[in-house]
Image (tube, rainbow, N blue to C red; front, side, top):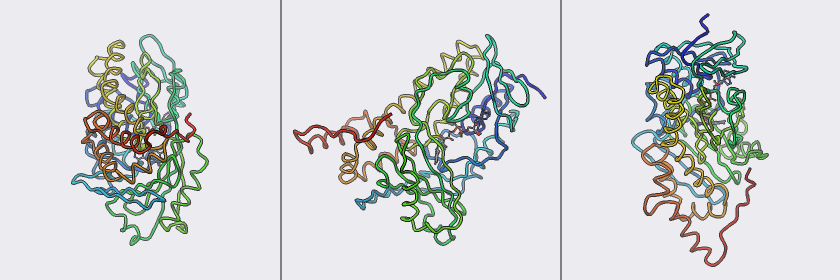
Length: 398
Ligand SMILES: Cc1cc2nc3c(=O)[nH]c(=O)nc-3n(C[C@H](O)[C@H](O)[C@H](O)COP(=O)(O)OP(=O)(O)OC[C@H]3O[C@@H](n4cnc5c(N)ncnc54)[C@H](O)[C@@H]3O)c2cc1C
């Protein structure tokens, strides 16, 4: 077995497979190391937002189970409901075992080598290479792309600074009769108010419903209760087949740097999930492609790769995540402000976030354009509370 490559990509999620595809396409010798046996289940709603599909460089339509052109946002207990539709899909529904494997197949067709059941256990940096230790023996490359997800072994072994905020999320795959499933056809549903600092979702798949709940509070104890309540609300508490899964989502990026000598962090390993929605596929794809392009453009020269990857993140993903975090704070840290915003500007809020989801606007547009959403929300709220002080957060931030 060959054990020396130009680039080793650790992890075959969207970040790793997109990086591997781009590198292989350019003729570099690339290996993808994946600890699981593929295709593997991944705890995820499997909702690919338009922003992700826009940057996806390859065609994987065959693994899209359903396109949702409509998003519905409900707010409990106020009984508010907002619906918005777009000509192009707002969220396209897939199952991650199929989606990730389709991306991997494209990368392999371009020339990438796959080693599955090959968990990276340790990493050592030499001045001109990186060695990874695996059950298949040591493997060496000029660079390693760490796409090994939220619990990234590679980042830990290299000793890269963290500072991410990992939040908990549950995903239930629920079998329901076809006629009930049809009621969800084409609609991505989001529900606020089941727990103070998070939301729930129901995503229709071909033969079942993926429902989930997340909380922005790292050690939230209410998730199980909230998802039980959600099942009740949807009328599926008695569903006989429910597969239950839980995992974490990193909604604040690492402190940085995102590259240490010859190791580049992408996707969840870097902490690039959206702070407002917890959606992580779109920036996983984008960061994987940016990492690959930095390696290609700099001809695998260490200093140039560092400079290019750092700059490309600073010009694209990082400012967007920073701004998204402010919107997330308004939405989740101040329940009274949120209730007020939904009652007075719910449709506008729903349209604005949908524009970001489909990729026609950015959080930065929402924040910095004249008559922007932030000013509109905060100034009207300040008027409302008059001389009284601004609301204080009742959430325990970590
Ligand atoms: C409950 C839940 C629901 C979610 N719903 C959505 C959603 O609907 N839409 C959305 O966009 N995002 C969603 N997310 C977030 C999304 O799943 C992640 O942001 C996304 O998967 C990140 O992609 P990635 O490629 O960085 O990492 P991953 O997809 O996590 O892939 C990492 C890969 O690395 C492998 N690996 C790990 N360690 C090693 C090792 N040591 N050696 C070799 N291989 C290793 C893993 O097996 C895995 O295949 C959800 C997350 C959760 C928890």
